[in-house]
Length: 232
Image (tube, rainbow, N blue to C red; front, side, top):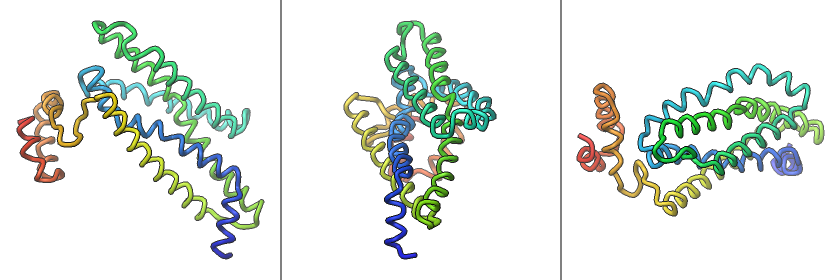
């Protein structure tokens, strides 16, 4: 089969374009993952709160995933995929409308409980999303073969990989623009090491040793002086 015929068989596959568009709109999650640390530092003052929240936010996925095959048989993989992403999107919108300090600035504990609960709800169907996306990708291979007579996983995976690359770059662009526009204090951007001091003092004795080992072994030497001045 020629390269051009393989390309045409994939380019004319509408289900694949649906998956590609879905993957592209995953840019929102890419942005959130990149500025997550900055959110905890700027909004709650400590990065360690993200660790506390992380202990809870991933739990629902482990309990929901066993029900995925039964749900897919009942509602269909496509509807399950669309429903899980819609639920996630609406949950994040609701969290945005409520805000990260619904109980006021003075009640930090209640605010942290709220944000942890909200993030747990938002991520409760993450495993369903991964399950349904993987299942739809498998169905896509079969659809292309049925439609064209060509089994073309390579071209499809290449297209998805390229869209993922574009998505990551767009996420980087949006993250940088948001950080600049909102004046977010970051862990490191354009030579700003000021928040290293706060992060370092949150660490216990052993963790500080690990931090120093990591600094000397992994970080470019040109940054050592400023980071050490801000920490040790």
